[in-house]
Image (spheres, rainbow, N blue to C red):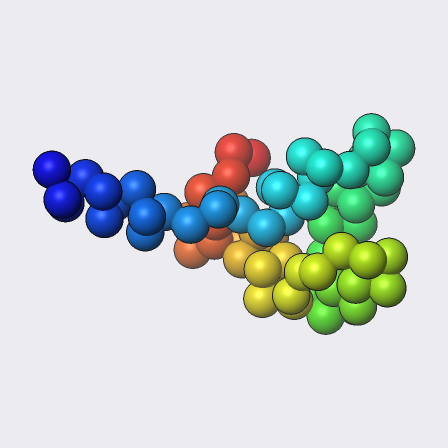
Length: 78
């Protein structure tokens, strides 16, 4: 059914932070999670640091991932 095909295509690739964490080694992933969970660090600063490491990710993606707990962010599990 065409509608089912459109639904599959509209899902996108998922949360960019989740994809980044899935492709990182355990040590780097744990460091990233620690920084993401600390509200002291601004999403823009995290984005710039990750981009310098070669990870293409926007501050908006990071902010959306961080808002997942209040229901206005991505759909990643908490």
